[in-house]
Amino acid sequence: MSQRQHDGSSPRRAGLFRRGSAGQPPAAPGTTRRTTYVVDGRLTSAPPHTSIADALRFSQEAPGRIALCLFPAPTVDDIAELANAWGLHPVLVEDLQVAGQRPKLERYGDVLFLVVRSARYVDEAEEVDFSEFHVLVRPNSVAVLCQDGRWVDGSDDATLPRNAETADHTLLDDAELLGLGPEAVVYRLLDVIVDGYTPVLRGLAIDQEQIERQVFSGDAAVAERIYRLSQEVIDLRHATSSLVDVVAALRKGFDRYGIPDALQTYLQDVADHLTLVDGRVSELRDSLSQILNVNATLVSQRQNEDMKKISGWAAILFAPTLIAAVYGMNFDNMPELHWAFGYPLAVGGMIAFAAALYLTFKRKKWM
Image (cartoon, rainbow, N blue to C red; front, side, top):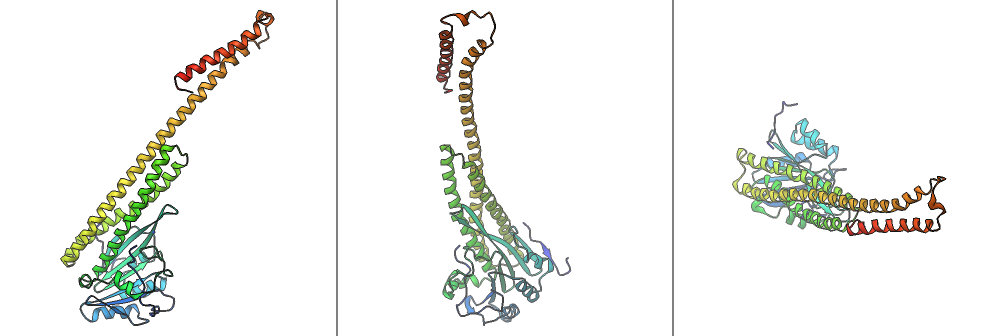
């Protein structure tokens, strides 16, 4: 996916996101935003009630500074404040207000906009839970909006540990990497999201193996499970294939926007891992399609066997019915009706005819 250029005149894992220190209150009433400063690769706590404009000014006052704003549950006011402070394009603001988008990459002036989706496998429900993130990057500043109110690992704001050391370790523990600029935060986010796809694929693969056993055991309910799992795989395929385009577009833009070679190397590793994940998702989807075809074939075979049995018993019952119908026509001149052996002969003929058909069908394995 190529980067779209805009100027001012244009019309469900690794604990990457954690809270700051327990004593740091929200930046403003009604917002869950957390602001973190990085100076020369080292984490520095932002003062309480720091606004987005304050964070932007801090990042621009001296080289080697990064301001990171995390929005666990962004509100309309949060987006409006971010738009005013950063001077965001109206089209970009509209995108920020709408969740449910596929991964994509766009550029509005000096602001890079990414939509990415993490995945988490819920074993109890056999579902893939997706979380959508909107990432904004500009020189020395990064903003991450969690559109579903969840972190990469699926935890919501209430269940995350209030531990600054955890935040330092999971997001900002590599001073050398952060020294490469704000794009390093994007790399960390992509790296954790792509790594999170692996346990999802593992869970889906286990479900696939269980489905295969169900198919060959003749479980009638397996078809519905195949369809449900196929839908989860399709959704995961949409997320991974679109993310492949996003990473490819990032790599193409690195040369143009002067991104350090070291960071390009890190992103290449993410791209390689993502390619493997995307290939496994495609293989899983093809396997489920084959399993569905096999299940349809087995169901058809079982139905054919049932039809053979039904047809065989119908033919067996037809024999006595035919004889009974002949002697039930009540013609006046039917000598067998007055013969002493007529009744035993008719019953014996019914039994013999039915037995002969039964043995024939049994030998042909219709019974």
